[in-house]
Amino acid sequence: MSLRITLVTAARILRQLLNDRRTVALILAVPALILALISAIMDGSPQMFDRVGLILLAVFPFTIMFLLTSITMQRERAAGTLERLMTTPTAKLDLIGGYAIAFGLCAAVQTGVAATVAYLWLGLDTVGSAWLVALIAIVTSVFGMALGLLVSAFAATEFQAVQFMPVLIVPQIFLCGLIWPREEMAGWLQGVSDALPLTYSVEALQEVQTATEVTAAMLRDLGIIAGAAVVATVLGAATLRRRTG
Amino acid sequence: MPPDSPTVSVEHLVVERGHRTVLLDVSTSIPAGAVTGLLGPSGSGKTTLMRSIVGTQKVKSGTVTVLGEPAGSKPLRRRVAYVTQDASIYPDLSVKSNVSYFAALCGRSKEDAMAAIDAVGMHDHANQLAGNLSGGQKTRTSLACALVCEPEVLVLDEPTVGLDPVIREELWNHFHDLAAAGKTVLVSSHVMDEADRCDRLLLLREGRFIADDTPGDLRASTGTDNLESAFLHLIRELEKAG
Ligand SMILES: Nc1ncnc2c1ncn2[C@@H]1O[C@H](COP(=O)(O)OP(=O)(O)OP(=O)(O)O)[C@@H](O)[C@H]1O
Ligand SMILES: [Mg+2]
Image (cartoon, rainbow over all chains, first blue to last red; front, side):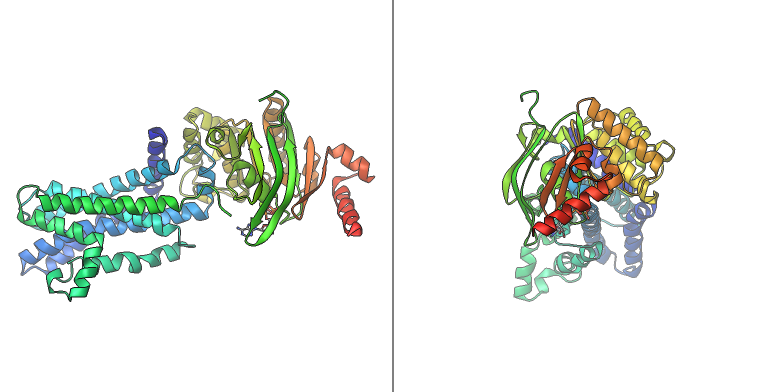
């Protein structure tokens, strides 16, 4: 592994992204616009927006980093650039690290814009710090990136890569407590929800909602989501093969 | 490594791809300081052999040694460069960004990247997005991404397909300059008029070598005056022999 090659790779991925101005504009603007829409819908119930808007701050970068990574990585495999990279001094971890840095930065900027809009204009209110919210959102997005990396190995086309979203991402969003409180779900659904990493991001965010300080539960949740990101990355790395058939 | 041992040595290589044996007990060696041509009909296994040499192909048995190390091993990755048959570059990056990226991976500078872009005649398109290039321009950009690392061993899979005679001439001269500087150049092609530009020819057919000779000797031994006829002659002989 080489820090220089990791950074060079991250810079290349960011440059690819920046060359696609429309995607950049969509990545930055869409979450803020949807938050504005939701806040308008929930106009009569600010405490409802405090709950939903806050969760969305983590759900957006999670979903978008999944999509970006699965599609870019699928292209990298299909276009032969992955095979080519495997003949250069690039180590697998350099490539994965490059993706994590590039898309992690991207998630940070996206979260920054969305959180600024939510806190300053839409009246989002949390007892704990907005910085903690951003940290949770970014760690969650890295998990999304790792899932995308893993999925790219099983997608023969970009279209298939996108189709993995309803399989891997949507159930997590439905069961994490965003659309319905977890406590009110049937027991077996709560069990499934307990097994899905996004649930712990939401739990951590709800801690920030009510506590001024960093709590033990918050740290435990962050640890779980970071652990899930590491596991998904290791599995994803195992699908990057230097030699193929 | 002793001075005159071959750069690449392939011994009893067997490769299976999707239940089909694509290379059947292939052995050869490729020296430094020459342009070696790998010729053969479509599907004969040229790309498979090249992938085995750069270490991206799973092999069933046999060994491939490059510069004294097992093919694809870590120390070789700065010393060997591979240009795939289809241009493997990033369509959403400019020519310059593409070549600069591969330059940076092997520790070369932006200036080196510009020199490689000049060498393949892509100077006027340096800022164009690779996705908008013509087929031949993509091929040349892909080539520049390998040349920029000044590798000791250059493995080029049909690098001159779709190029006009002028640029083809320039590239072949470039390959010979590299060979004259002591590098090892392996070029595949199925265009026989290019075979004449190689110092040595390996003819592959259905996963086996059917000839290993200089272009001149090959013409002489088959009693033909061009390589196309020589190749056809060899194949007919083989078919007659069953
Ligand atoms: N990914 C793969 N899976 C299964 N079989 C493959 C795969 N790639 C190639 N083959 C088969 O292996 C054989 C050799 O292919 P290879 O690409 O090495 O031929 P080639 O000599 O490079 O041909 P061409 O001149 O058309 O590029 C062919 O029969 C091909 O169908
Ligand atoms: Mg081929």
